[in-house]
Length: 266
Image (cartoon, rainbow, N blue to C red):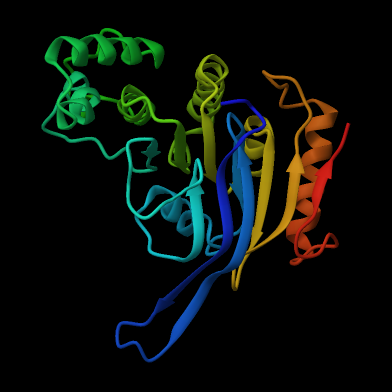
């Protein structure tokens, strides 16, 4: 698949949540439209409650929706191995070692034991956990748990990585280190990545495109293309310029760019 081929397409995607007694409802996503090309690193950014995680869950196949979301032109209706999810809460099995956690999805898919071990070791090395294969999650730091969670998803070799604020619970130094390591992995594999974050700096550091959502219901107020080489200098004036554009849109609510505006800057 070429880099310019749409891999994910969102057409009039709508999600509404009702109260427990179904007496009231809240429209979270309303006729949202978006196209993502293969190999792009996309960050979804916006205030709490704007629908970022809901949209990610729709792509993962966890959340029912109206409209159409397609992966390679096939409608997404349930979870699939071509879409791998990295959660904020690590989601490791505490009774499994790192090796066993990374091999879990492969075991479910009936991959032979020898191939499971080889593939798990490859991705454990890739995320920098060599030597910790037999450790249980309780013996790992937060950053190491997230590395293990990433290795487990990568071992299944999905086409799309869905990441829901994976570094939000980490300290700043660990978060920045893992951001750089994630980009190193992404540069090698060029998987399509849809990454949810609250951090403007994180979004500009990581993304090819930053999609800013505004709430009630969610709508795209900015589609910003980040034209900077990687790895990026966090103190580069151009980084600060992009961050300023996003901050201005968020401060203005709907933003001066209206419902949907694509911005490409040099």
